Length: 230
Image 1 (cartoon, rainbow, N blue to C red):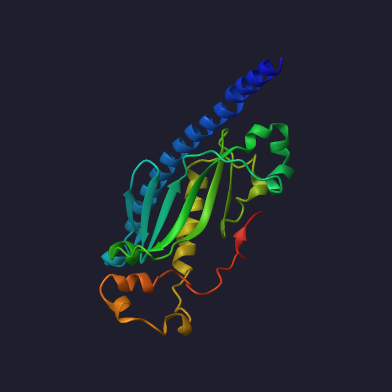
Image 2 (cartoon, rainbow, N blue to C red):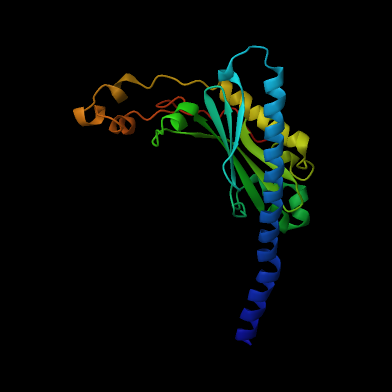
């Protein structure tokens, strides 16, 4: 009897939870492909609208593989990265208060698309120890409903989960908000005491880069006051 119950439990999970997670991956991957197309369209649109003849400020899109795309904007690079796993939320998360979720708990399984902000020089000079910042992450479930946790991503928070659906317009809004934030998010000088001492070895060649990690606002508190949850 016990053996049969274990078998039933395994079969039930295989045919419900595992199938749902696979479907979430498939759905998220399809939306990530759509996201890449939106990014390419934005590059064309903005480059055509730029009135200054200066190659340095032209947007550049680069497909880095199935799960990563990069968008160069001025001195910044936005990295769009799709996680290949489906995620569930911890029991204290706000998602469990959502009426849409209460109808079917399987709707909480989500794929994730992360948006990181790096400096373009980090890639240009291969500074492997430089820092990037997560400025947004997009959660998408099997039905294509989504919400965003991120910098200034207003109107896309968890309260909209169940009503907001992924489409070209929503992906464009997410991307443009991330672009605007990255352009306004400045590189600040690190505190003097953190860089006032250096050895001869650290000064030599590429070893120097391991001493002087560079990232926006390095050494300062990365404020979360403008992370949107509504």
